[in-house]
Image (cartoon, rainbow, N blue to C red; front, side):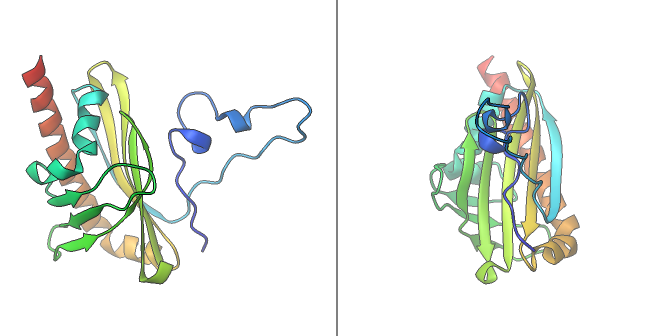
Length: 188
């Protein structure tokens, strides 16, 4: 099964706001470009509302070197949030042994999203991990925290580990909410 990237909030795969520039009709350029297909695979995610500005949430998410201070799902993380950059994270899911991973940053937009891609078992498992921040008000956001499992064996892994992975995302979201709201309260 082919593995396609997720519909990102920015760039050519934009999903919020006006459609991408490439999809707008342009005179004399021939037929319009069809919209990108939705990513294939198994999607697992958790959403949470956070009473803090997107800037505060982003500040916490992008600082991988401080994830150990608040993040129960990734108790160790290091690297720079830069497209194409490899980062190192330690995944600690409930009831599972910790696992060190080296994903590559796929896409990031300040105050909006962080996406990374991980390939395992020679490409049989491909995942796209995402944290997306959607500002609903000046000091209120919804955070989507999830992963898309693709590749030949990815969907079966996603189905088998789904509840455990979702619990990990929920724990991370709750910790992010506590950290962001505490940080925002201290700054006001």
